[in-house]
Image 1: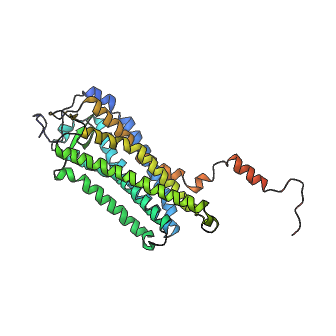
Image 2: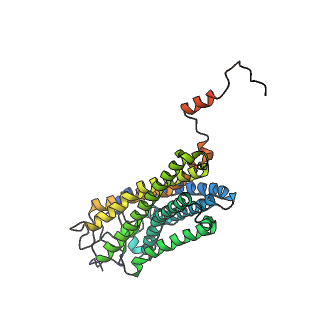
Image 3: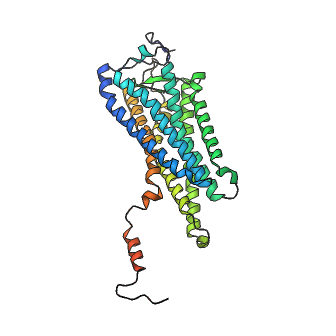
Length: 343
C-alpha cells in the first residue's frame, strides 16, 4: 500500500500537478479529434475489407481475415480508451473522487495492455501465416480457411486478456498516470511491478522481432522465386506481393510506434537506483517521457488501416508509371506512319 494516507485506493500515486496544468496538457479537442480520425480510418478499412473478403476461401482470404481482426481490434481499442480519455479531458474530474475504489482505473489498465499487445501479436500471427503460405504452400491446406484464421484471432485476444488480468491477480499494479487522465502498468521497483512490466515489454518486443525474422525470410523466398531459374514457371502471383507489401508496412508501423515505449519501460524498470521514490512518485521527466511514448504508440491504431487502404493494387495502379516503365511501353508500339503487316 502506498504510504500516502490521502489515497482512497491502491491505484493512486502522489502527483505534482495542478488543475490548470492538467487543462493545458490534456486538451479535449485534441483527444476527440485523434479518436474521430482513428475511428473513421478503421471504419473505412473495415468497409474495404468487407468487399475484399467476398472472394471465397484461400490463402488471401485467411490473410484478410487476420487483417480484419487487426483493424477491428484497433477500432475497439480507440473506441473504449478514447471514450474514457475524452470524458476525463472534457470534465477534468478528480479521479480519486469519481473512482475511489479504482475499478475504472483497473478496467482502463486492462484495456490499455490488451489493446496494446493485440496488434503486435496479430502482426506476428500474420507474419507466420505468410511465412507458411510462401515457404510451405502445400503443407497446410486447412490453415487457409477463414474459420482457422478467426480462431487465431480469438487465441490472440485470449492471450492478451490473460496477460492484462495479471495485475488484478496480484502480479503488478495499474496506477493513475501523469497527467491524471489514464491508467497503465506501474514503473515501480516492487518485484511484481518489475516482473509484469518486463513481461509486457518482452512479449511485445518478441512479437515485433518474430515478425521481422519471418517477413525477412518470406521476402527473400519471393525474391528467389522471382529471380531464380524457375521464375518463368513459378512467378509469384500479384496477390502474394500485395499481401507481403501490406504486411511489411504493418510491421514497420508497429516497430516505429511501439518499440520506443517498450524499450523505455524496460530501461526504467531495470534502472538502479529506481526512478520511483518510496512514496510512489516518479520524476516529472520520466512521467512526461512515458506520456510522449504512449501517444506515439497510439498512432499505430490510426496508421494500420491506412497501410491496407493505400497498399492495395487498386490504389497502386492509379499511380503514374515510372519514366523507365513508360519508355519501355512506348518502345513496344510500332513507329508512327508504318503500316502493320497483314496477318
